[in-house]
Image (tube, rainbow, N blue to C red; front, top):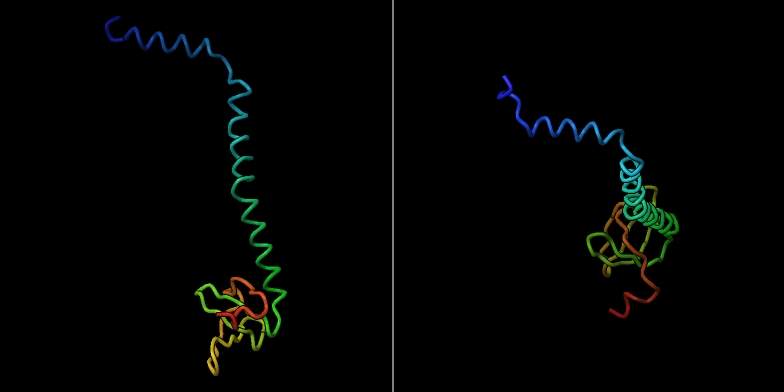
Length: 112
């Protein structure tokens, strides 16, 4: 009945028994990978989100802004959730507060 058990299978069992318990490197690799993932991806995204929230809370009437859609204009009115932006003479649009992408330096719209 020895022909049912292959020699390769018996050799694998011996090498697995000789390996013993997992070493410290087996546990360190996933932990190092998680730390690297946090430092490279999560932390910079949290920093950008915090800067964006700070910029949104500092918006004031008269600021020149750019929306996510690329519209540039001057803030006329600010409410809790919406901002009225003048994009041209007698053309006003209401946008969500979160859609403001950047605040432009004063006088930028006149230069364009």
